[in-house]
Every structure is written in C-alpha cells, then in structure tokens.
Length: 233
Picture 1 (cartoon, helix red, strand yellow):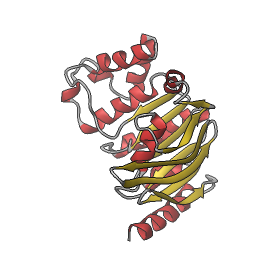
Picture 2: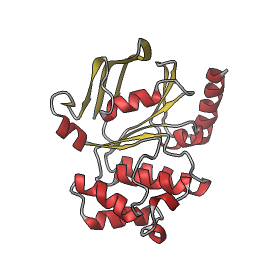
Picture 3: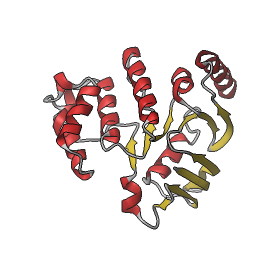
Picture 4: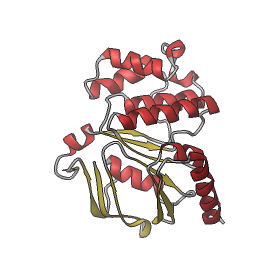
C-alpha cells in the first residue's frame, strides 16, 4: 500500500531527511520512534503530501501524488501533531465540515463521535475542549472516511491511560479492516501493542527497523524501551 523509495528532504541547506526507503502492506502498521528532530514528522508530512521531497518517490496503492494528487489524497487520512482549526465550530460541525470533502454520510460522523466518546460534547465549541478531547477529535477527522492509509503524528499526546487503551484497540480493528497505519510516538507500550514494524530514526536517518511478531508485547516493549534509551543517550 505504501511504497517509499529514496525519499529525502532539505530545508535551507539543512538535511531534515536523508534518503529513506520503506514499504508497508495492506493492514500493516509502522511506528516511527526517535527524539525531537529525528525526521519523523518530516517523513509523515511527505507521505501525507503536505511537503514535497527533494528526491525520491512515494506511492500509495501505486498512485504517485505528482501524477494524480486528487486520487492520492483520497486514499489517505492525516492527523497532525498540532490543532490548527476554527475553534468556534462545534465538535459535530468540525467533523461534518471535514466529512463534506470526503463525501462522508452524516451517520458516519455520528458513529465517529460515539466511538471517540464525544457525544456529550458534540454541540460544544472546539475551544472549550481539553487537550485529550482535541486529540480524539483530530483522530476522528483523519479516520472519518475510512482511508486506505492512516497517517498519525504523535496521536497519543494528551490522552489519559483509558483513552490510550481505547486508541490501541481502535488501531487494531482498523488494521484488521485492511487499512495501513503509520504513526509516530514516544510511547513504547503503544508501539509494542500495534506495530508490525518499528522504525528508529535519528538526525533524519532510519537507523534501525525492528519486526514485531506480536508473541509477547510486554517483552517487545521492554526491548524497544531499552533501545530507545540507548539511542537517546
């Protein structure tokens, strides 16, 4: 579903992403790990079509954004790491607004509101929501149209332990539906639960790729945590 070949990015003569190659199949989940400035968001922005690479190609289901942007964008759902939206919209208005671009029926909007525990807040303005509720709302707009590829930038930021568990279970179901998921996180327990492949990044480079056979999530989490700490040091 995702085919990335030798993608790189330079900002003002500074290399933010060195040539990187990566593939992900239908229903596969790739998690990007690494410290600030590792290149995680840069890579996600390129896959989402927000930023163009200086070199290399990204294909989603064999579609190249440079050849057919409209079709490419229709295949993805993207959740940014920051909330930039009209805060005077209500929760329902916010999701309905994004739903119109994807020709999403209103019943789907209602379903997402329910699944994300925002029913009691659906008529409340976005500006009155907590950080965790905003994160759930951002996730909701990315997932709204049941995209073929779901791209999430630090989706667990601001979520309490209960909603992190809900998020993990949702991602497992989304994977089972055939959706390919790629997201960044600092939470090794989340990565261990849902990732099929964990990519460690540092200074714009992919330095290690670890496969997860899901046989022992707790042991895999400890392994990831140990490697993460070593790399941070």
